[in-house]
Length: 304
Image (cartoon, rainbow, N blue to C red):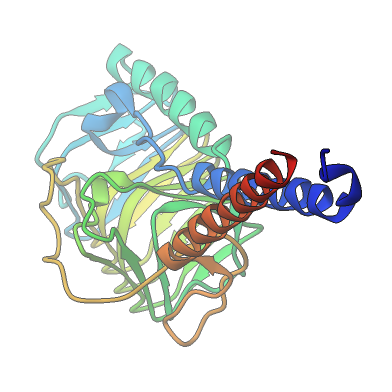
């Protein structure tokens, strides 16, 4: 005689354990997908440009530009202030090269704007350490230091999308650690960007309108404006060769991959999903399936 008909609780336990295990596995898979590495944003022919504008490029003082400088559509007289500014690359004023670079910039801009999943950040980025990912805010502001931690992965990508402006304070800085590369840091700005005097900035700034660098601002990356002007004042823009690992040496540090709001001021990330979460999720999944298997085995013995 089969005894399982007198053991409805065993059936419920088996089904319940299996359901819990399946649910936990699905959650773990979803979390893992969200944390998947982002590919870099391809700049196409805009890669060779340290400075690119839509209308004019105006320089004051002894600015130094490591790569190409261009304007499109603009005009042949749209670039002024060189000299005294120095361009190590080639100047492209309203020519076909600059026009193609603008087309490629538009593609890259839209690519960055559409990346998901997105972690929403507060306006102020100073005092924060962030892991690779896509971050969004209405406006980004930076006073003090923003640290980008690649966690030992030189291909790690950081994408920041601002619905309005990007404004950095005087003397502010972006710091790269643990293999992070300026080649893989992108700032998509829906309005305009202003980098404060004496600030040290990292990454490719892609602004819909204009970009202004106050006196002595330094950029390891590019300043690319689609429709407006780029204004320089004794600025240094260095478009580093994208060599894997050519960044700040790794330093021992424990950080987490953000998945929610990030608080500032203490150098840590809140609402983050760390590797521990994946371990816990995996453990829960194994426990759920293990429990289901035990109950099922007991049921088979009783039905024998």
